[in-house]
Image 1 (cartoon, rainbow, N blue to C red):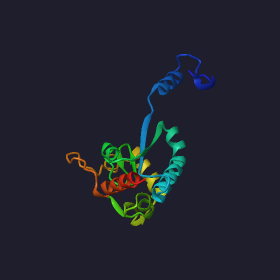
Image 2 (tube, one colour):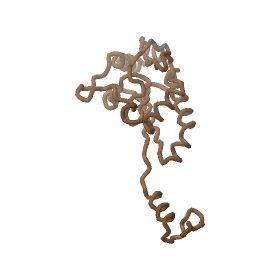
Image 3 (spheres, rainbow, N blue to C red):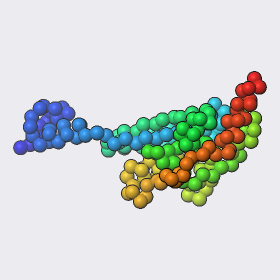
Image 4 (tube, rainbow, N blue to C red):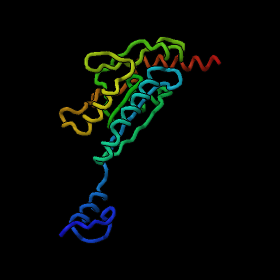
Length: 189
């Protein structure tokens, strides 16, 4: 029997194509959770640039992902206290995690003048390494590669967590210094 030709195959008949369509509509979409963790979007040029590049990367791949049944959720998480840093096991600013995995396996940092200006002390922020080059803002291709690898790569090629499950998270000294400097700055106002 040929498939019915009603709009959206929603005629209610019992042909194989309509049963399949109903089953496909009932099937849950896969979810891709992207977390963007940052210290500051008002002053920090690295956080601002990473936010913009992340949004551009998502815009480029979202249509393909949605067509293949992947729902994309972007969470922007402002890490504004040491307690929140501990809650999210924040390692370095800015951070992008895809389904809970940091897209940058090795944490590398350099002095961030804008965060230093923000808190009144020297602060190191993340440097992104992609294809052998260092960037203060992750290249769009790096983010797209991480997203596609998470969705379509095999288990061996997927990102791995850079935090050992057996090790207990401790707030990095650099972040402790940042939050202490921010507290002092606001206490003096």
